[in-house]
Length: 101
Image: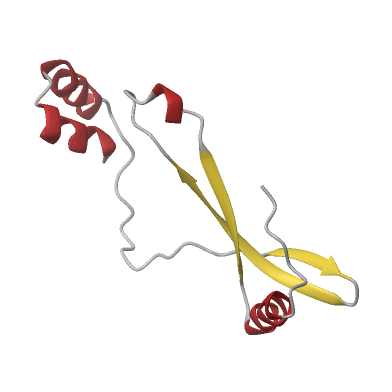
């Protein structure tokens, strides 16, 4: 947990007090099924005559002290199946894919 990391690096008493308060709030019981996995629902994207399956992940940077990083997030898309991976690899190798920012 980010709060625990900040406490371990700063020993800030205000953060310790905040963590203790948060831990005192009621919370739902833990899931009794430890083998439960998240379900991946791919995004389908039609490109000419090919349907690509992709999934995304979002990375958020920064800590509460890093105001300049507070809103920075990067979303990356990855192939969700072998056919999509092969298509993207082939197109990339042929120079047909360009990075867009």
